[in-house]
Structure formats: C-alpha cells, structure tokens
Amino acid sequence: MIVLDTHIWVNWIVNGNQASSEPVINAMTADSSWAISAISCFEVSFLVKRGKLKLPLPVDEWLREALENSGIESLPVTCEIMPKAAMLSDIHRDPADRIIIATALACDAKLASIDSLFPDYPELKGRLVGK
View 1: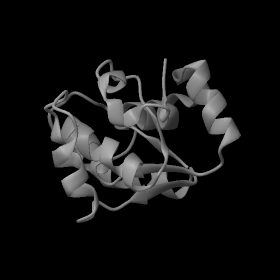
View 2 (view 1 turned 135 degrees about the vertical axis):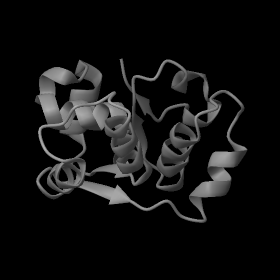
View 3 (view 1 turned 90 degrees about the vertical axis):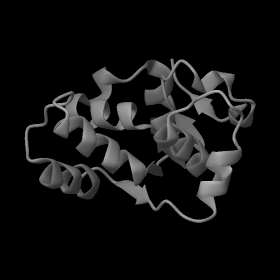
View 4 (view 1 turned 90 degrees about the horizontal axis):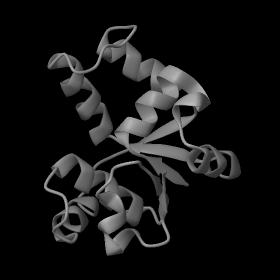
C-alpha cells in the first residue's frame, strides 16, 4: 500500500500523472493499493475555505468523487495512529502531516510525498517515495 499525502493526492486527482514525479508514478504503478489519511479530507476542505485551493466542484462533492472514482481508500484516524503521530521525531509541527506519516507507519505502507521535511524523519527510512 502507498499512502498519498494531501498534495500528491489532490494534484494526481486534478492533473493526473503529469502532476506527479516519476518516482511517485512508478511507485503507484507498481503498487495497486493506494490510500489517504482521512485528515487529508480536512486539509482539502480547509484549503478551499481559506481560498488557497480551487476545485471544479463543491468540496463535499469533490471529496466523494475523488475517492469513489479513483480507487483510493480513505483510512480513518484511529487511536493507534494518534500516539504514533505524537511520538514522531520533532521535525514537523503540522499535526496533519504528522498524522499522515503515522498512518503510513501504522499500515506498514510507503508514503508518497514531496514535503521537504519528510526525508528528515528517521521513522520514514525506506518508506518515502517522492522527488
């Protein structure tokens, strides 16, 4: 399984393969199981609310379409994931990104991200797919 961070997920849904790097496209091609953390739905909604992201549909419709028609599973934020997020190395202060990382770890999955801070996490060694 590959967990997609919010940026990768939105760009892939909106722009297709040309929006992703070759390593991400190759990893997604090699692994047919893709997922996002449910926190990504919050991030998308919040970005739309703040005017930082424009979608072709109202956000609730876009989220439903982006999941139902893409084969991407939404993974719940669970009591197993939350302590993993809290106990990660102190590299990133963004709780949503910490939850996305912890989701990948809890699912023993790879993580697709181009976030410049993610490679600094020792917990992601051997799991990160990006640039």
